[in-house]
Image 1 (cartoon, rainbow, N blue to C red):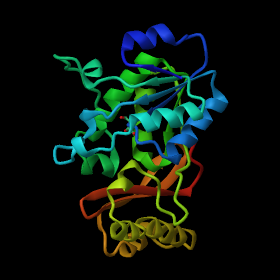
Image 2 (image 1 turned 120 degrees about the vertical axis):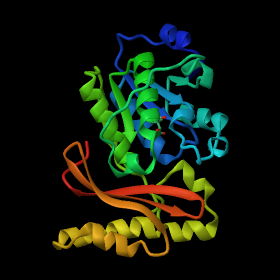
Image 3 (image 1 turned 90 degrees about the vertical axis):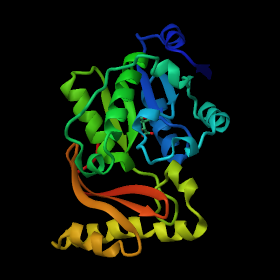
Image 4 (image 1 turned 90 degrees about the horizontal axis):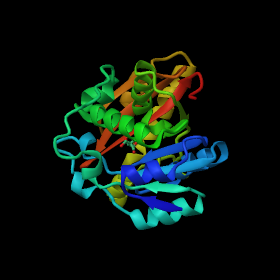
Length: 262
Ligand code: PAF
C-alpha cells in the first residue's frame, strides 16, 4: 500500500483506466469501514482509502481537535484489507488559502437541520475527493443514511460519473452501531447509548404491526436527549432514523422499515 499526501501524487499514481473504488473516511477505522474496504476490494481493480478529518463538516460547538486520529493503526488495517492507496492529505492541500467554492445540497432532512453547515462540508469534500481520485464506485455506510441521501442527490444533480454503494451498518454484539464517536463514551454512557438501537428496533416492530414507528421510538428513547426521530427515504428504502445525545456525545443510527438500501 502506498500513502499519498498530495493531489499531484494521486494523479500520478492512480491509473484512471482501471476500475477504481474509493472509501472516503475520517479515519479511526472500525469494522464498519473495513466492510466497505472489503466490498471495494471485491468489486474494483484499484482500492483507495481516503483519510481526512474534514474541518468544514464540524459544527462550531463540536470539537474538531478531539476527533480521534489514529493514522498509523488505520494504515495497518488498510494494508491488511488489501488497499492499494491511502490518500491522507493535510488540510491545506484540500482547502488552500483563498478557498471559496462550496457545494450546498438544499434538501438535507432532520440531520441537516440539526447540524447547519455540516452537509455543505460533507458534499464539498466528497465532490473534491471524487474529482481527485475519479472513482467508478464510492462506498458509504448505512449508519450515515442521510449523508448517503445527500451524496446521491449531489451525484444525480451534478451528473457525476460514479456509482454510490451504501452498505449495511455494522454493530457491536449488543446492537450499538459502530462509530468513531463511540470512543468518547464512558462505560456508563455506553450502556445508556443502547437505548438508541433498542428504540429504533421498537419503532420497526411497531411499524410492522401497523403502529406509528416515530411515536414508539420517541417514547422508547427515555433517558437520552433525542435531536429527532424521523422517517428518511434513501435509494428505494424507508428508514427510521434518530440522533441522540448521551452526555457530550451525539450518536446517530437508523433501521430499514421498508425496501432495500442499495
Ligand atoms: O462519513 C464520513 O466519515 C465523512 O462524512 C466523509 C464521507 C468521509 C466526508 O468527510
